[in-house]
Image (cartoon, rainbow, N blue to C red):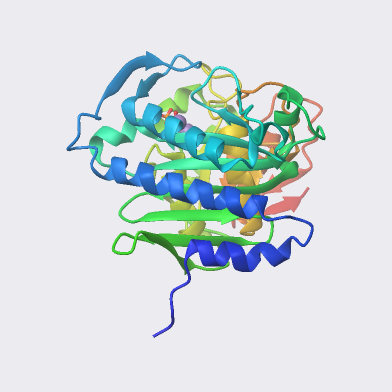
Amino acid sequence: MQGIKTLGQFIIEKQNDFPYAKGELSRLLRDIGIAAKIVNREVNKAGLADILGSAGTTNIQGEGQQKLDVFANTQFISALTSGGECCIVATEEEDEFVPIDSPVSKNAKYIVCIDPLDGSSNIDVNVAVGTIFSIYRRKSVDGVATLQDVLQKGTQQVAAGYVIYGSSTMMVYTTGKGVNGFTLDPSIGEFCLSHPDMKIPQNGNIYSINEGNYVHFPTGVKKYIKFAQEEDAGSNRPYTSRYIGSMVGDIHRNLIKGGIYIYPTTASSPNGKLRLLYECNPMAFIIEQAGGVASDGFNRILDIEPTELHQRTSIFIGSPDMVKVAEDFMVEFSSEKNNPLNHAINLNGTAVAS
Ligand code: AHG
Ligand code: MN
Ligand code: MN
């Protein structure tokens, strides 16, 4: 039997990938892993404790916060504060970024952006939820870090990951050298390497989108959905529809099985729903590192220049062949006349130059 490798062992082993680093990034990842185990403990007993249901407050987006959202937010901020490697935590649950201004932390090198609990509407019904995180090196050299240190393009991420609290709990992360997945073994309380060097299939047959919003979708998305539902044995259509409502859960499944996850702009959310800093950038970094593609329908997610903390974007993410076809539909049916119609879709679902 092969020996197990824990997350802690793996992180230390990989520290040599960053000869210039002094171990802060490793410690940061370890701290996130520890906080995730504490959140996992609470998520797992959500049905037992008086922790279920709404906290009665709303976050900056006006969405109801669940009690576990608040708990997870507090846990991650606290772990990142006591670790001393991070000078700012920007979280989906707080209106402003949280500066960590202890004498040790204020000169720390790293910024963390986090969605402490993703898919929180699924907590009450025992469906997978997650945590998504993204790590940047601060731009300013020292002193008090500012908003400009947080507003960096996704290409600047030094690490990103997610934790999925599902039928088992996993942490999946990248430092820009591939993607590795660790499953929590509750009997020893450790994340153990279970999915080394994860790769998303080049193509797939799962599409994940909240089709209830169909009437509000852009034409390109409507046409893509119809394309996904057409019969075509050569390209394995009709595709299968799978949508949990937890981005982490939907993307994790598609990463393993192949597929596309779409959250487009809609009539009621003209900029999309999902947040660039806390959800889309980290997921885009992970999926690209696994060989996939992440786009806003026209451009690479990681190239978007953020201008505000809670910025939203549309997202098309997953198996490269599927995302490219969806992008072709977006371009073809875009009302932006400056998008040249230089692509056509053939019946095999592959893009060909016209
Ligand atoms: P959060 O729980 O952090 O607010 O995120 C929920 C997100 C995402 O995880 C999910 O895919 C999507 O919102 C679901 O939105 P709809 O209910 O509009 O489909
Ligand atoms: Mn979320
Ligand atoms: Mn959330």
